[in-house]
Image (cartoon, rainbow over all chains, first blue to last red; front, side, top):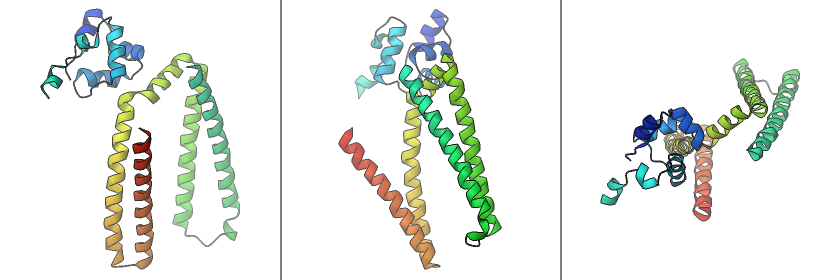
Amino acid sequence: MKTKIRELRQKNRITQEELALAVGVTRQTITSIEGEKYTASLVLAYKIARYFNMTIEEVFDFSELEEI
Amino acid sequence: MDNFKRKIRSRTVFLIILFVSLIAIYLILFLNQDKLLNSSNDIINFHGGVLSSFGILLILDIFRYLRAIKDDKKLRKLYIKEHDERAIMIMQKTGAAGINICIIGLGLATIVAGYFNELIFLTLLGATLFVALIKGLFKIYYHRNL
């Protein structure tokens, strides 16, 4: 699933490690989500969106799912 | 995090008890070798190897937990490592695929062994059925509880 996490991190100058610690996952999980290899759970998506003060839809791109 | 700290503390105590028991079992077996059935050196060495490897792993875990109990940052990292959703998913997928491959492998080995040795055939059959039974029971359990 496409996300804006990398873009938001770079804009806010946050490392993967910092984001991972804040939302309670490992750095590898953030890397996988950014690389579109792993889709975050609803809880994790909510935590990430909240971390950036945004909604889930603003961070995660659900357009591919709407086609199914 | 306090709950997790308590959990780690009790886990450490359990591992220490396990480690002491392991040493005791090994010493009892080692000192009574002559009273046991005549085992080959390979089997005795294998037992020694398994027990000492298990002991080393226990010591490493005990030290890791003790460090985490003393340091809150390490405790949080340990919590994240144990509760990381991707790691949990990897473990579930590995377990599910691994057990299927084990059942198929054991089943094939059982068929082949049937042509050569009855004892090995029955042993492998028992192992195959046991693994399949465990998988089946877990499947029923999770279908009812999830």
